[in-house]
Image (cartoon, rainbow, N blue to C red; front, top):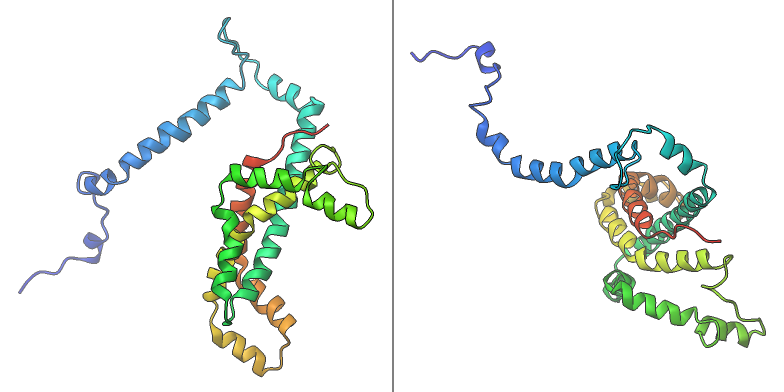
Amino acid sequence: MALQSSPVAAARPQSFTQNWSAYAFPAPALIILFLSLLLPAATTLVMSLTDISFLRPTNFVWLENYIKLFSDGRFRQAVGNTAYYTVGVTFPTMVLGLLAATALNGKFRGRIVFRTIFYLPVLTSLIAAAVVWMYVYEPYSGPINGALAQMGLPPQPWLQSPDLAMTSLIIMAIWRDFGTAMIIYLAGLQDIPKDVYEAARLDGAKTKDIFLRITVPMLSSVSFYLMIILIVQTFQCSVPSMS
């Protein structure tokens, strides 16, 4: 009769030499991650604590650089503009994307066409989109100022005015990221069981209550993921300062 191994022997951890192949598979990716991300980040952090200039001996100044940075008014203004731009783009994009995804999640004729139209800005080249929006915001012959002139209102310098430039850029960014939010929310909506909606309707729940009490809570993980993605994108494209 064959001897059975004891639970203690079966639970004994295996040595590194026995699992060397399992460690070898992620090793190249970990090495690349260390060389391209972790090592430069650690080096930059150490350099920020010095007065390095490559022209004289380097000395540690510790937090002096950070003190000078946070005492600079232009830096504080850049941080404020970045936060304003990020909030102004992220949350309206999420709300509009959720509303569009909810409207296009049903079965009706032409929904594929509408999904494609709403997603086209994501596929558009950033340079081409910038050229189009520069024409839209053109202060003399742009279509927006043309519409204002038809209503008897004066034209506005959308991109030249410190009061309007940030709002104009936020609108353009929402237009660019709107399709991404819609597609991500559509994927999340299709994972919600239909039985939940049917049970809510049988209980007499209204459309607004179904949306606020079922759809929105069940998309919380999707919303969190989308928020992180949009914050990263807007931080990379934000305008640092406006006087």
